[in-house]
Image 1 (tube, one colour):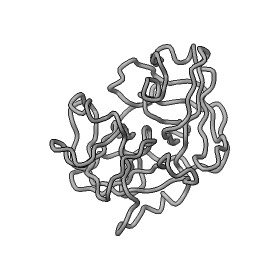
Image 2: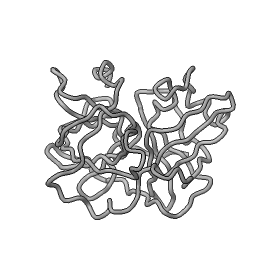
Image 3: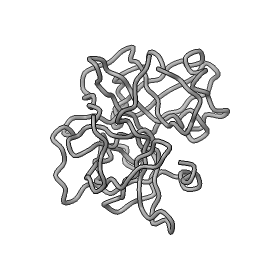
Image 4: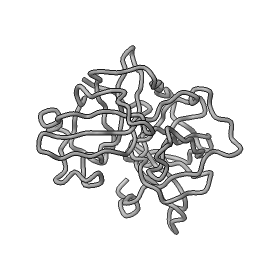
Length: 231
């Protein structure tokens, strides 16, 4: 993942799906927005998150780099300090700002920011947002997938769906997806789900590049397939 360090500073957005049949599972609202504050006074709102259902329990998932200067959190909050310093972390519907869920505890905190994923247990949750299922099998090259997200430039957006194709993985836990549609340089997708053709989540979006001379056009996310949720 370090090879992408120079191109992650701005997240990229895909154009909405054209010519692809969306999974039926994505007809429901799944995308959430983060709103959080720490006891130190640091606070922020934005980026993306989602819920997952596993072993009869519901968890919230987003990207770990939201705890850093990428979301205006300076100095960065170490995950190992999270549970002692958090004031609140809420998940909102993107368009309305309605609170859907609130964090209880950050699970299995570790301070490796390259492992760009956070799992939360939930203290309160309301109806209206559907948890995703986690895929049990990794994608294979050429598989169609979808990024679910909202650009900051669309304040009325609840969720858009964008087509990608899986191209491979690196050795640090990241899946790489080729962009199918036109890309715009719009931020706000950190922590968004990347799902397979069945609507099962396979990765948590970290960033992307557009027409890079080395990498081409792609998005990449930390793999969720086979990633354990430990208490």
